Amino acid sequence: MKTLNLYITVFALLVSLGNSNAQNPIIKHIFTADPAPLVHDETVYLYTGHDTAAVGVDSYKMPDWHVFSTKNMVNWEDHGACLSTDVFSWSSGGAFAAQCFERNGKFYFYVSLFHKNDDISKGGVAIGVAVSDSPTGPFKDAIGKALITNEMTTDMKHSWDDLDPTVFVDDDGQAYIFWGNGSCKYAKLKDNMIELDGEIKTFKPKNFTEAPWIYKRNGTYYLVYAANMPETIEYSTATSIEGPWTYRGVIQDPVENSFTTHPGIIDFKGKSYFFYHNGTLPTGGGYRRSVCVDYLFYNDDGTIKKIEETKEGVKPVN
Image (cartoon, rainbow, N blue to C red):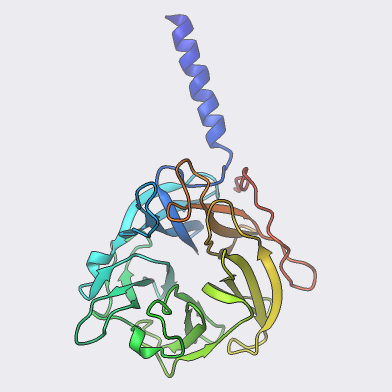
């Protein structure tokens, strides 16, 4: 009996030690995609899509968005599904890429999903916005209709060109939303964060496919995005959020076992982090993906060093 108890104690210790080191993918119990990290109150909240397609099914099945949190970049708490497409009465499903953004104490969740064929839209991918008082939800539809429908953007002729919203508030308080597949689109947001403020503009960064992620560092605007197919992650920079944008190169080569990837970048406790997805979990693949994180480093001139993907991931921070 003593031998058995000792074995159990040693096994538990080994498990504890194993859990103290981050391992990519960072979420292993479900398939996750399209990572969107948010730093709030000394905590990183990670919003993801949820791949539920069966093994061998070559199509997306994504019913909801999930949220996880960490205070040390290693131990992730699962808060479950924070929002589903059912919340949007005008939607016909498809919980594609999204980003949550905090402003004035509220959390605005910008999502891409299919619109019903109705009097408002003939269908296709639209962008909705949900709101909550908590970063973990529950979220509710903020406006009862789509923020952006397929009919509002006509430069691309396919019905899924309004994917992958990302939001940024500049130093002067002006909010912007960027999104797109095939072309990158952007518009100003009103202070209430749930209405567009002016016209939608479009442009095509070099090799742009989808999944823009925009942020500002040391006075430079960075537009990071998925390029080509299978996807790489590339980026451009500008001195104005409205461009012109200068192409800077490749950050990440195609990932293992997935033809897509998706960037999410944050600074947290003095380090920069790059989130992405691949298909490396058992039975994983292009429609059963998994979120990972590695360090992101800059050169002295502000350009981004190429990502070194690791199985180990990142180390814990205090």
